[in-house]
Amino acid sequence: MKDSIHPNYREVLFQDMSCDFKFVTRSTIQTREMANFEGKDYPLVKIEVSSESHPFYTGQHKIVDTAGRVDKFRKKFGTVGSKTSVAAG
Image (cartoon, rainbow, N blue to C red; front, top):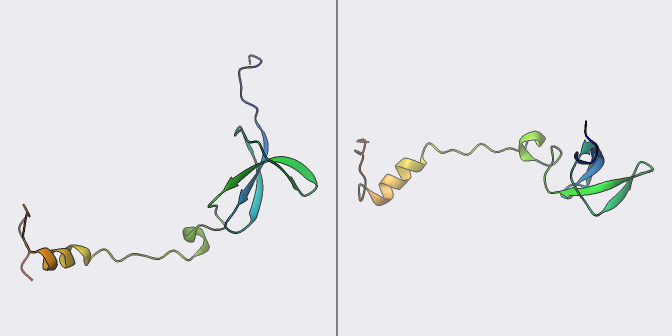
């Protein structure tokens, strides 16, 4: 490999700001902040969502019922401007 052409691949601390979850992984991301984690200093990257706070991974994911949206729209507006036929209901 050529010297001085590759980004600096190093351990970086990611901090989920919504639940204060921290984890260390390797990355080439550039950051100005540093933080101490388990007695060692790492470059710090603040993130808004991680697997600890995302609703899908925490089991708080809500399934949205979209089946009635088209019917509700057609009841409200009828066939005005519609290029498709309306199913009789």
